[in-house]
Length: 285
Image (cartoon, rainbow, N blue to C red; front, side):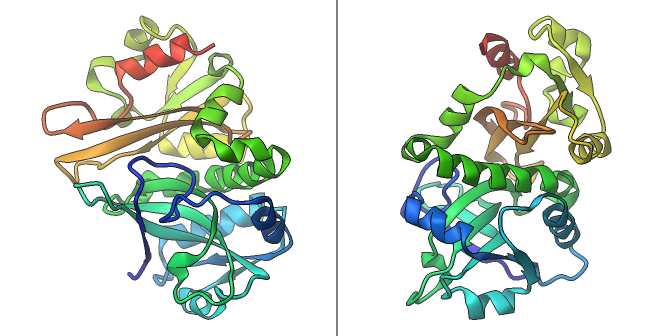
């Protein structure tokens, strides 16, 4: 399956997936909000991503008009500044010696005179998974991630100052306390030394519930204001050394409540939520 590949020069994930650490300007945001969004589907017609992204956009997207297109159509359109694009891209961090490729959900605005799509200005992006990881581990969260990106764009428009700082820091500083919500976790995404509710409560004495991925999707669909869930981006056994990113997202508001990452190596550190993550949540005011 062909995908579009971006090469980054930054060392950690940010909400900008552009090679030059591009930050959207007020003009970019205005251009986007006055454009029509083209949602680019993958070549494989039965890809789970195609079903989930169409479902998510139909349910959640309301700030611009939209239309679903193919990758071939995108390659004919990307020079048009009246168009914007929501698509899955492959991201490689240039200075990362592991040369890992991630799937990102990205939004770009069209621009005239470009030699290739790699130069498109990006408005927002969020990591989905390592490219080798099966869709079943991340596609079910698509509606929530689309809602986050939409809200994020509106936040940037209303609060221009947030564009100048680390976006994750902004959300860590400006979200409500997660302790008021029930934290939904999938058991295989929590370290074995702390993968029971009883063990967790010794460190994090707040509401936690182990659930299935289907139950998380149900909470997202129902926009359950009492639930936050873990969005884990890890290697799932596909690599001996890799980063594990951990993001906690509200099921209703799609806001970020926590972001962190650690290195996973053979015999060292679990690919998922750790006891130190619960300790950080406990400290969060």
